[in-house]
Amino acid sequence: MEPRLRTMRALVDAKDARAVDTLVRGRAVTAVYRPVQAQRRLREGGRTLGSRLGVYQLLQTLPLGEWVPLEGLTERERCILPALPTWTRRRRSGRVLRLADAPVRLEALLTRADTWVEALDGACALSRVAPRMAVCPPLLKDRDRACWEADFYGVGLAECHGEDVRVLVNAPTDVPETVAALHWRLAEHVHRVVVEHETSSDPVTPVPQ
Image (cartoon, rainbow, N blue to C red; front, top):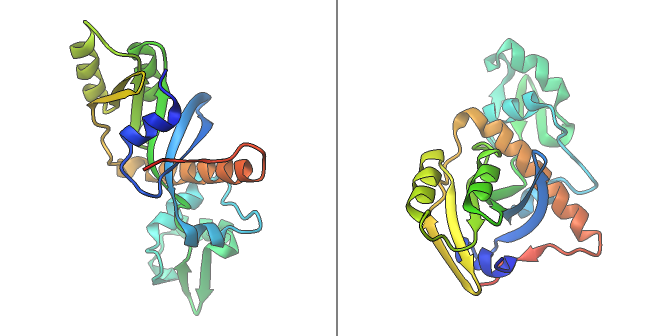
């Protein structure tokens, strides 16, 4: 299989993109991301948002950097508000200001396998919480079918051989609003993995340009 760096270079067009290996829904993936330095600084000292989905849903409801009257929140949102870590928002005179946003911009989740079916199955299992790309060895007679299925399921598809990486189907970059909170929670997970790698002997890999 093509080395990871060459694959990244062919699939991602972002100068500050980086890659880190992790597990998502129990599957090994390579997360391609761009760091958000201001949000990284906000999380210094081990600050985390946790896993409660309602916290992410509420934060996304609040416009970033704008004061919002508490009376404009729903009853459910007012109940969740005390669960927001203090570093994520400010409260003053019956208003709340959101400070936190996703700590990384997720460009893609890459799944690799020895066959296009296995690679595509792995990508589909991730759902649409982030752009997905299935990477496999060169396709022969099944190329048309593989491209059709990848397009049908909203998954990018690329084949690798030696130094050649060929994108057959581009990965949709939009994330449905219905999974936006899950997308943010995944971004928090990727950020934590990156921080853990930076404090260990296994460095985070920059994407070459």
